[in-house]
Structure formats: structure tokens, C-alpha cells
Length: 327
Image 1 (cartoon, rainbow, N blue to C red):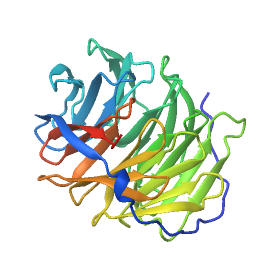
Image 2: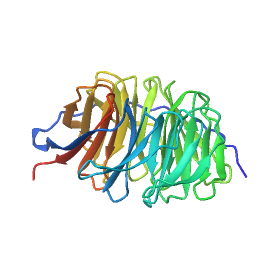
Image 3: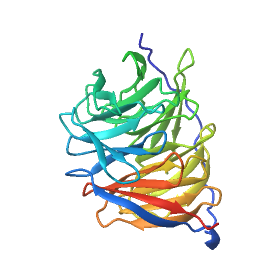
């Protein structure tokens, strides 16, 4: 049975200063491969749990699975009737979820491309989706209404639904422990919902500086989150208090995507300005930067092992980088 969720307000955050970048921590990047993934922009990327494969989604109605070491296409999934806006590889590695401008969520085999489930309760285009850490549930959000649905991934039944306080939800993420779902809206609000408690209580974080949040990523360890958007600044903040720990500044246009390294020490970001940046969250320093010839860079994604970084841009290209730090 579907259970509606209700919000509970929490205090606003506060800003702190960011230190300068120590020269000795600068990273080096080497392109492993570049491939044309789509006829149109690459909108989403997701790694397999072992880091050996990568799935992409974009405007040409195809989701493609790539060999992460060679850039070879291993299979294509063409079950969508419109562009594929979001893809997510299950933590167990067997399934991929994809969705887009049609109001359906498809769950399909990562090795054969065969459709396993189609979730059809949404009435608007699906903007984002994400797996819980145990692979048992899948969360999805549509727009512009912003209805969030949490599904049992195996049966397709709805575990819970909730309607965020604000419309135009742009991003969604699970907590690392699988107990909460967070959504970000274009009005600057971030809401966190407890999906396992009997009353499914939530918390609302809203601050004038959270201008039109476009990207959201929960840090490993459960206590911190990164968010960014029109403000061009990344907030790294405490999910219990809403208070900022660090601010990362350097992008010159809105931030579109955020991704954590597996150990939570590095945060990657991509922007409409065409740049990809890597931040050291211990110091706030930008330790690597790259500029695409085809902005915007819609998506950036760390591999599970933490040494490879994938990004997808507006002309349909994917690049996979090897990121190295001085010994």
C-alpha cells in the first residue's frame, strides 16, 4: 500500500570561508577514451558496481552500455519512445533503470538488454531516479509536478509516495544507508524524507543562497550532502542541521551535476560553463579542472574505484579520465 509522506521543517544553513588550494595536492588527468554516445546531448551516466562498464542516456532515445576500459559499446537499449534523461545502475550490477520524457521507468537486464519491469504511475516526464544502497528499492521523480515515488524494484509495487512542498524538482538522491531520499527543487529548497519510519517524516532545508538547485549528491558516511545550481557555488552541508561546512566556488555558470569519490574525499562537479572540476573536501581546494569544447557538460560520474571520472557533454560525447595524484 502506498503511504503519503509529510514534511517537517528544519533551520537554515550558514556559510563559512574556503581555504586556498595547496599546490602539492593538484591532480593530473589523462583521457582514457572519448566516444560519440548520442545524436544529441548526453544527459546521464552511471557506473556498474565493479567499475568495468558504464551506461549512458541521452536525447536520441537510446541507453548504451560501454566497456569502461576500451570505450566499446556492449549493448544498446531502445525501449523508450523519447529521449532518455536519466539512467542508474543497480548496486548489485544486474539491472539498469532508465527514464525520460515519457512518464515511464524501465528496469532492464544489464547484460542482455531485456526489459524486466515497466513502472507506469508517473503522469509527467521523469526527471531523475536512483537506487537504494541495497538495490531493493528505486526512487523516481517527475516534473513539473514533482511527485516522488519509491518502488519495490523486484515487484514494481510502490513502497511510498510524497509530494514535495515545491514544484519543479530537479534532482534526487538516496542516503548511503538507504533510509532517506532527498530531492532538490528549482526554487532552492532541499527536502529529506525518511522512508522507513512509520510516519515517513521529512525535513526541509531552504536558504536564499540555495538558488535553483540543479544537482544533489549525498556524501559517503551519511552526514553531509553537496548541492549546487544557478548560484554557481557548491554547498557542502550537514544533513542534520542544514549548516554549510564548506563552499566551493569556481564555476562561472550553473552547476548541473555532482558526484562523490568512493571514499568521500573528492567531489566532482560539471557546469553549463563547459568545465569539470574536482574538489578536495578536506580543504575546499579545486585540485583538477577541465574545459569541454562543447558546453554544457551535463553529467559527471566517479567510478566505484575512484580513479576514473566520466563526463558527458552537449554534443553527445563521453570522455573517461584517469585521475592521478602525486605519490
